[in-house]
Each structure stands twice: as structure tokens, then as C-alpha cells.
Image 1: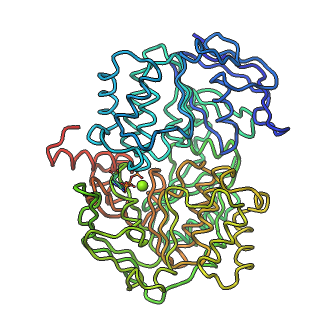
Image 2: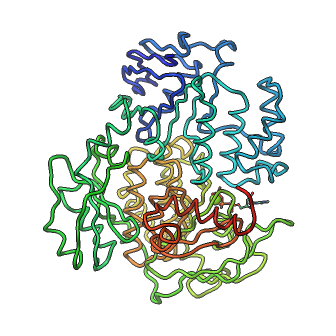
Image 3: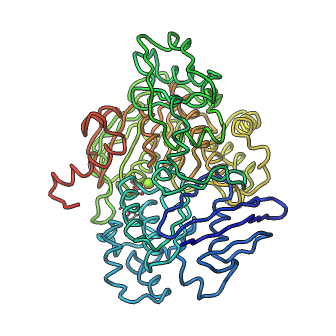
Length: 563
Ligand SMILES: Nc1ncnc2c1ncn2[C@@H]1O[C@H](COP(=O)(O)OP(=O)(O)OP(=O)(O)O)[C@@H](O)[C@H]1O
Ligand SMILES: [Mg+2]
């Protein structure tokens, strides 16, 4: 059955076109992935499908009903998880679920709530206040609240932002179980490997549909244009930069010890660069991914260099800029971080991975001096966190937005520059404005900025003083792949410059950029090594996501915990 019928739908906001005459259909029993860069119109489309928003012209029917329709008869049949879902922070996990069940007048709630708690792995935290959940746990609770009742159409606006790979797999299975041929799912996502698994994808850009159809068909067009480059690189980040400089290539990325590259349309691989980047370098074909196809259709070339590195300071000693020994944090009886030790050198990117609630942000907060450890020792730049000199050389981008929402973009830059006592304030602020292309947004309040710009601003503020140690807690959460690529060009170049970077992410392709990874689970470090070392622990051809999922389940098995 046709669940959505759209013909020439147009929607504008104060003259700005958000959706430009779009036409498509979506079927019941199928998952339609909604993808596109930030600001492409995904959220507007989902809001139109809820029936709550008027549009300028065109025809739109959802479940056979003409939109807009604000009647409760229509609303009863839709499930909707907006980007910013309202949890009641003062209520516990269970109370939130019960309240949503009550509001939706759902029968047999307790059995279903119990299932949802098990699926989201929140059962043992039923009594915890929503305010004290980790970022990803909150997202899972919000999703559970949306799934309390079985809808005829389910509208999910980026439900997996900040959700760990294991829960994302669970979420996928849960949605499939829910489908059973009846429910239509419209799933907006910035994880392009999720889009790859959808029955069809709708790719939006600047309010236009660039593609609608099977993800495989789009990917197949890239056959013969995706390459694996491996061998003895002189320096893998330098090599990546040189590869990206080539006009013949659209994109390139580090994947553990090799580099993946995608050529521009009608261009062959530029073999002449190989001698410059290392010895015995070989090139072979790789299967295209949906991300390759996405970048190709948008035609945005990944940048090779970032001048951001020029503002960063170098520390004379290269070894162990971060030294952590037996770090532990308890909240009451609950141990959030359990006896963790590691070191990070200058110029290294250290990835801190782990499921939601593993303790990653708690470690970051202790490393920045925002939370006092229960026990253990932290040395940054060989000194203590009480040392002003040390603190002034730390940059921290918090997982939760740390900007001043009511201040304009330029005032945020100013504030952070003065807070960090940057010497040449005006020059530094102008550098940041140029690097991040902020000109157009200078007078907009931080709260009102598009998410990609907000994250860029948060990164700019954390780097304002040119720190030698940088902590990035999920810097790319929720932003589109193009902006993520831009962030990693910055991070790679900063690291090349000698800055010590510690980063968390739930994007497994980003984990591949790291020199070393530590996998954290239930507060403990359960595995550590290079991306390749972690992958081979699981199987010779494992992906980073396989490694993540299986190392955790192996740990559970060894500890006698059922899946
Ligand atoms: N102030 C607090 N009081 C009680 N428990 C807390 C508090 N802060 C964090 N926790 C708990 O500590 C654990 C670790 O949380 P943390 O935010 O460090 O996880 P995380 O690994 O960053 O997860 P995510 O990937 O979802 O961001 C979670 O179980 C969380 O609920
Ligand atoms: Mg976190």
C-alpha cells in the first residue's frame, strides 16, 4: 500500500525554499532512508508528513489522508521521533516510559515497556533519572517512548545520533520486527551505512530530490572508481594529504593501515603520486559504499589541508603528553570509570570508543579537570591539572553543546578568546572566521545556527588558544558526512603538526583514522591497539564495526553475561 504520496510539494520559510517541488511515494512495509547534507530539507519533509505543518503548494497524502491534517484520528496512526525529543529529565527511565504510554492511552503497557527496556539495555537503569543518563542512553530512551504504540507510519528524524553501533544494530532489528508488512518507516539518518540497508533512499540536497531508488543501484555506478592504496607509507597522514591534492580524486580516507580513495567521474587513478608517498605502494579495487555514491552525487571534493594547524602550539617533549594511571570514578555505589590507564604522545590521535554509558565522557571530564576522580592519577603535559599553564594548553569540545546559546556566533568567539587569554584576539578570531567560513553567520545566536555550523563553532572555540592537547567528545555527532570529512581534515592536520588528540565517536569509519584505540565497556578498558590490531582479534576481514560489536560480546561471554 502507498503510505506517502507527494507531488510537486513546495515549502518555504520567509522566502527561503526548504523543499522545491518534490515528488515521491513511499510504501507500507518498507524502510525509506532519508539522507542529505545538513539543511537539505529532511526535517521539514518529516514535519510535513506529521500533518502538523502547512505547505505552499503541491499534493501530499499520508495513509490516504490529505495533508495537513491535525485531527487526532490521523495523529493516532503516526509515530514520530523528532530530532529534539522531550524527555522529562526529573523523571526516571521507567517513569518516562509510563508517562508516554499513559499520554498515548496504550493498553498492556507494562509488558511492552519491559520489552523496550530490555531491547534498549536500559532495564538495569530503570530507576535512574533521565538527567543522569549518558547522551546515547537518552536517545535510546526517547526512541523507546516513540515505539510504545505500533504506528501505521513511523517517522524517525535521526534516531541514531549518538547511539553506539551495537544499539544501532538492535534498533534496526527492532524496526524490522515492527514492520511485518504494515508499517511504513521514513528514517532520516547521517549514518550512510544505515541508508545502505534501507529498501529505498531519498537523497535530498537544497530542497531537491537528487535520487530516489535502491541504494545498490546508486552504489553500483561507482564500480571501478574506488581504490585501496597500501604499502609502506613514509607518513600516512602526509600520504593522505598528497592523495587528496590530486585533481583526479574526489575523496580519500584512512582505513587503519591503508588509504581508500574515490576517483572523480571519468578520471583514472593518478599512479604518478604513488612514488611520492611511500615504498612498494600498491593499488587495487574496492567495492563502493553508499557514502562513496553520496559524495559523488553531491560532487563535493574532500579538502587536503587545513590551515588550522598553524594556530596550534607545539610542546617540546613528544612522549606521554597524556598519562593516566588507574583512573576510577564512582557516583555513589555506581562505578562509571573503573581503573583505566593509558598514555598518548604528541602527534597521535587516540580514539576512545565504547557503547553508550561506557564512561567515555566521564573520563574526558576528569581529564579536563571538570570532575574529580575518585582515585587514580592524571598528568597532562607532564604536569598536574591544578597548574594554570597545563589548563591553558588543553582544548575541550564537550559532547553536549558548550556554547552560549543566546550569544551571537561572533560573541561566542570573542568570549572564548578572552576566557583563554588569547594574545592577538582580533587576528585569531578573524583566522577562525576564515577557516570555518563563519562570515554569513556572525550575527546569528548560537542556538539558532544550523547544527553543522554549531559544531564548527564549538570546535573553533575549543581551539581558539591553540592548545597542545585536544579532547574532542563526539565532535561529529549528528553532522553530515561532508562536514565530518572537513573535521577530519582539520584533525589530521592538527595531529601532523604535533598536537595530541583524544577523540570519541560512534562512527566506525572515523575510528579508522586513529593511531591507537581503547575500547571502554562498563567503565573498564577491555581492548586496546591500532584499528587493524583490534580488527584481527575478531577475524581477518572484520570491519571496525564487527570488531566493536564482537569484542564487547566476547567480553560479556567471558563474564558470563547473556546477550
Ligand atoms: N552525575 C551522574 N550521576 C550518576 N550517574 C552518572 C552521572 N554522570 C554519568 N553517570 C553515569 O555514568 C555512566 C557513564 O556515563 P558517560 O556519560 O561517561 O558515558 P559515555 O561513554 O560518554 O556514553 P555515550 O556514548 O552515550 O556518550 C552512565 O551509566 C551514566 O548514566
Ligand atoms: Mg559521552
